[in-house]
Length: 72
Image (cartoon, rainbow, N blue to C red; front, top):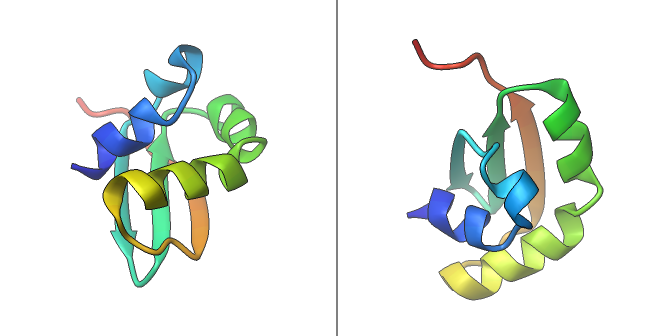
């Protein structure tokens, strides 16, 4: 699953914030619960792109980070 690949590629303090993740047309989209986590993830997007590409054996061209509302 993509979420597990993303979480395993991140430090613990950021991994728990990943609410969702998916890959479509070479773009990895990650959902997080707040703008603060989105901002922190943007600092590591290039390293994250490389690590998830390697672990998932898929070519990721770009990373999008979105703030998603918490699940009820």
